[in-house]
Length: 480
Image (cartoon, rainbow, N blue to C red; front, side):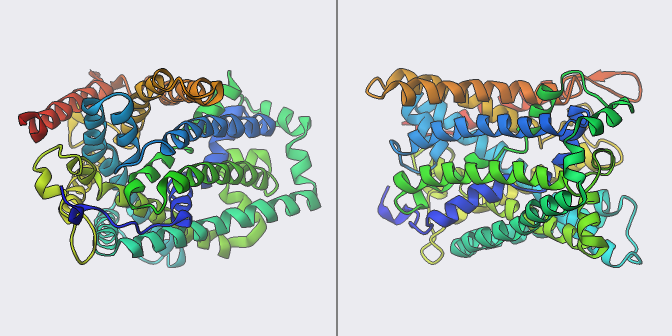
């Protein structure tokens, strides 16, 4: 494969950091305060500890991948690490899974979320606007706008990758505006009127406990709630081959980005606690704190910032989606590598891989709508939540990578060889268990209206196995 099919080194350290921060911090952070408080029964101290524990798990995984990033550099970070440590076949399975399931399914969900909060902002500004049944959440307007955003994100990434990088930087700073305002204004507001001290006092907790809102295992349940909030940082490794001085910049981006995310989540949570009573936050979410501090006008503007936040996450996911098959084709693997490894001379982008990514993102958008949003499950017993289960799969696939890293690098010291990868191994295992625990038995056994029971996870596993088999069958490197 010639150099004409090499991706251009176009992204700097700032873009990489913004990818890490911008993909992880999406719409969920604006509402996680409510989830955490409900899980802890209103105990803010336990909530802060939960954010710290969840962040430390994320940092353990980040540090492990950061060490690998200083040692391996090829096309796609995670696939590179799997290939060097576990083997080519395992790396291909991970790369195929990310190209066909993980990246496009997450991209489809974020296209819908961006459309949803855009419509929430529009209707809050002008309530007279008539919408179809389902409104901003499941109405036809939401799905049409979701497909529009999907195509828009594709166009930016496929036609002007450098513009996509600039958009990522811009949206990351934009989404930090409301978070930063709450971090500062919430603490000042809460200290001036005593709300912050009151919420962290034992009296406030006792008042909440009288309502019966406590949780049996508060800390564990709260840490579980942070698991999905910290998901997404690993997608930044997909631009490994396009990052200037990646062996130096990618580890820095992962670690700095992870620390920023952790700090923003913790201090935002404390800021929110200064803007409303614990009971208000548990019942109404962080919106009540924004309204109390900034008034109704800013409350509506908040919805716009959430839409921008989602758009930034969508851009980062589409950036990875468009490179899915290219990361395999660049290795001479997958279907028609001579086709999907082609890099356009004008845009310096893998155009054929981009088209494939857009197609599968659209397919997964339809699946998400049919299984989770449509009035009746279009797919019946075959429907499952595509926004959750692919995330669980990624952490399962990380486990052999961490194990083999500890086995294959005796030249490293104890900290780099055993401590950090070991903590990442435990953290990844916890994320898998957290995904199951946080949603109870529902993902595994769901009751239908007619009394019958189906197992969404079972059908997802069947789909995963079928997709994997198809991927192995179409891998042209097997024929050589």
